[in-house]
Image 1 (cartoon, one colour):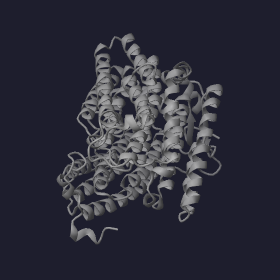
Image 2 (cartoon, helix red, strand yellow; image 1 turned 180 degrees about the vertical axis):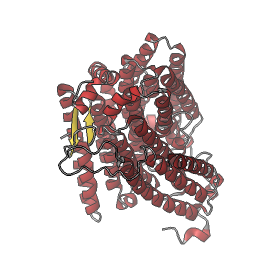
Image 3 (cartoon, chains in turn blue, purple; image 1 turned 180 degrees about the horizontal axis):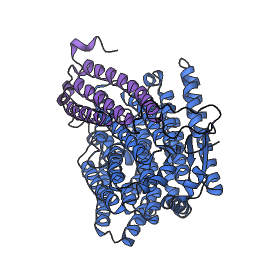
Image 4 (cartoon, helix red, strand yellow; image 1 turned 45 degrees about the vertical axis):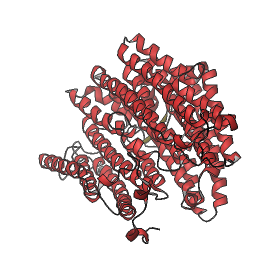
Length: 492
Length: 133
């Protein structure tokens, strides 16, 4: 049963390929498939929360020899958030994607991307993680280049080369880990790696993984592919990427730096913390200079990644819990912002802040839909971003990390500044002289955005139960013996 | 033998990194290829190389012999080769597409995603237009 998050997108993608000439069928399959995935994800979260960590030995080869799928609470939360985003985008894409891209297989690529993402989340094997990464990357390569406009092609070449480089580094890391630990099963590695002498070798390999996942998750100074490529495809694809791709990188980082590489946290996690600070600052400063909504939001992705790294760098149970909560919050809020940008573009025909304006008067609803996730991202109470940042800051205080707290709060103010800029330019100021008449927007685009914003607001209003779940998940991460036992069947 | 493989892999890594830092896209592509070869060699070397000891379990036994060649790195390499083959095929097509759209394979020309371009720079050069689908 826990293999369903991989199987549903697989079948969805295959059926979409079979119905290549029947666009109507593809639309129906996409809606049904993503709804099914969402239901399975919800069920899985409840199941894992009640029955503990689940694992599945594929082909009945017992661990550590076979291929393992393992779902702990952190995985289940991630799969649920991804399924939510996937469902929302499946609806949005019905009207948001142009026919040409749909004819060239957008929907099947969408499913294969989801398969890769879910596979990366629930696998318990380091090499399989690499394979799922490649499944995900391959679909994203095609999605980002689909259409072949000049900026798209330029963006995708940067995206492809840097991500391939990261895969190569990741694979070398896997080879070296196999040499040190003699296995690739992550739970088994967690048992073997502490015995490696001298322990410095493990730290060395850990840095290799840090760079590889740093490129994937767009951390400083490895993030340059992201703002160069994310704004080029249609906004539906950008929203999908912003919710899923970099977060898979962050997820993998969390997995390996809580399970495998915890021998020398003084060294490795301090580096993580320093990178986190720089990522926040450079991301938000980059965003402040932009006038295109999509580029601005792309830089904000980078900035928010810094907060996720910060929780991992602090490496305590409250910090990890705050990071998990932050991850849920940022995926929802960021995707909502991109989708609202898509609606604004559909209405006024541009993403350029200089050409926008006046939406507050004519369409208060759009303004509100933008304002709520934007404030949430900046951290205004009682929205989810406020609680996420508050918890991170409290966790930092407990560990006396004053500098990173100051950076996090400063970046928060700058985030508010750049969100205010978008608000002023796109919604508040008078419309430019030459503005065209506003175009109507389909209900297929409205409904998912409204739904997503409502979920995002609820995440803030009902922060307590979600936080309780995140704390449980963090408990499993910081003390991996439960995970190891679930996979290996023996208590370490 | 292990030492020789390690040196070769290192040389390939160095050459690949050098090529990936060049401005020409085709050279970048060659760089990526060299890097993936380097990784394959590294994977091959990740378990001890033991000649003439196949990992076969003799009839009537349930465990392999004490010393045997680890088959896993070879399985990993096979997977990695297949994946890098697919990715390289895609990258080659993409590079060709870039040349069609831009009329150049110089990375310095591709700045429109970072520094916004003028409208006329965005036009696809005429001599390549008929090839673009």
